[in-house]
Image 1 (cartoon, one colour):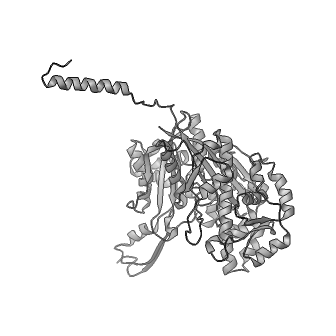
Image 2 (cartoon, rainbow over the protein chains, first blue to last red):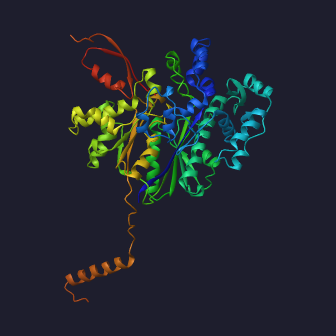
Image 3 (spheres, chains in turn yellow, brown):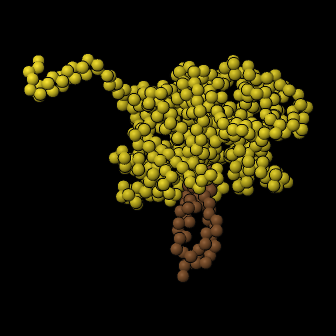
Length: 512
Length: 43
């Protein structure tokens, strides 16, 4: 049995105030250099919702334009927004910050999130018009509290403020007075991750055509950790998110592996389905507040808007073979193993060349590669270069080394088999999976005949190993349902009888 | 005599470029002393 990709949703939330209040570059700067020029200049570089909405890489992330269309657009993208851009799109939406604060509260099960009463009144009216916000989700939003109470909790009770244009409209309070694992900072981070994943799940359930009651398992693959001082990464985001999304028959678990986690989760989900363990498994992740404005200093220094103002999420539904949707080839998985080594050649060989060799394929045989899909407009001003391009170059160079490609064909290989990056630098979000939705469509239409998704993770950031990690898989077109080989009891009995008869004859008897 | 002979070397590698251990391997036999080596993730 094959495991197919039934749907993939992608969502963004524009969170300009969270860039300033919660991004780790900014929180660190406030500690080490509170009066810095950067912190003073930063608010002038914050984008409006309309600007974020029309930003071409964001339109690409939510499926409004294809990577090829993005690649053909004029740069810089932040000066060439798409006119008449709409909030909702094929793959998901771009939610504004105010509505997201209410969704965070709806995702709070421990009375930790409080919002100002007038803010709730006006914003709840907006959110109630959202086509996917069910009554039971809206009913989780509380009436609201006073401005004085909000100020008191932020100033005296270690709460994290929730702001709109610099004004406090709410707070997330700490979940324990001593345990740092349940601090307001961590609770906010985890609730943002949870809420953005829930939003993606709602879109996937709306568009996949699968009833929520049919989802049996959820694998959450973000980079956050939830738990208390006795079990710091205990989990389980997956089940907490499934609860709000209304997946009543699902359980789930969290899978971690830094940026490679989504690719690991896809392989795990496909394996669970192929084994017959579950019929429908969702791989899901929310976004990261810590990474908001991560490269803000360079963006401000170079006069750019702060482009890392989007919290991202995605949810991919992996299902039992339907004979139509593209499937994940579990026979030829690429793995960066402990023994692989760290040279770029060894890494690319283990993730790309070796699985292709085992499938009797060559590097140019894959129509599209999706490795790290970060938007280069974010990374280049910070000196990190064009990460997708660096990965495609490495894959092409290996093809040249293996004699599968002429050196002079390298640039055309990159153009044909690679793509312009579009994903926000939200860690696990850009790692291969942003292309899954586009790949599904291109395989269904016959535009491509295969695609390889590559996830890479920086394990060394956890300071437990110097290794990094990666895993890759191929997406292939579905050629229709395979005939299930049924066990034929009658046929087996006849075969056994025949064999026994022949055996008896061979002993010299005259059996009939 | 190698260009790096008796030099102390600090290595900052890039996960999506050349990682630290790979640069470190290139230092073997040059006479350089690697005093610090790490790989960083810039995304």
